[in-house]
Length: 224
Image (cartoon, rainbow, N blue to C red; front, side, top):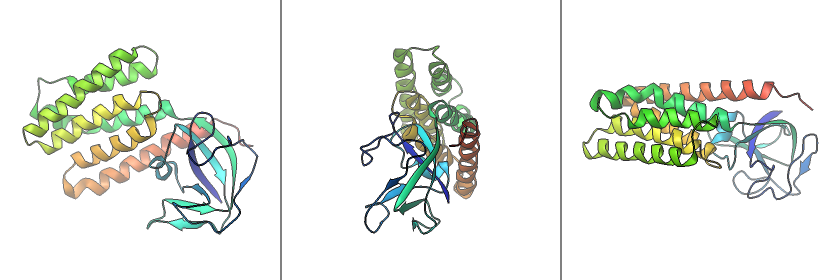
């Protein structure tokens, strides 16, 4: 069956020491156990995102009898994994983070209408991924957004804090090597900014958005 997996730019992870290659099947000799041993992957790109150590997304083939983890399943462990195609998803991750932050930014700006730091962090993240902002500008914008978040926390404005935090994560995601964890965190913070009754809907919408963006990018790459 088809699944998804993230690696570093060079096709390695902490446990995948030999770079993966499209069309080459890697195997595991033993009984696969999720989170412990075996060749791992996830049902969707969003499920794989929480385990990402890098921004390269792989579409892989795995055995039908792979051992599931979670309820609902968010990963599998199997005896083999065949990479079919891959794409550098860093730009997608940053854009996803920005969209997540923008979706709840009104909650911050309603409480702090004169504080533009979170919005500026989002704009800088987009400019940075396009090569139009320097690392220094990105770092400064991200730090400012975190300061805005702490200001909201000091004012006991939880929704505003989470909204600003999501914006800060968008800037963090534009920094090399941080896109995966930042995208996941931006989605979490955006969902947390919603009212408790709307949390599940916000999280579901984030999942659907990321999967759509990731799969669209992957579809541009020919399959092996």
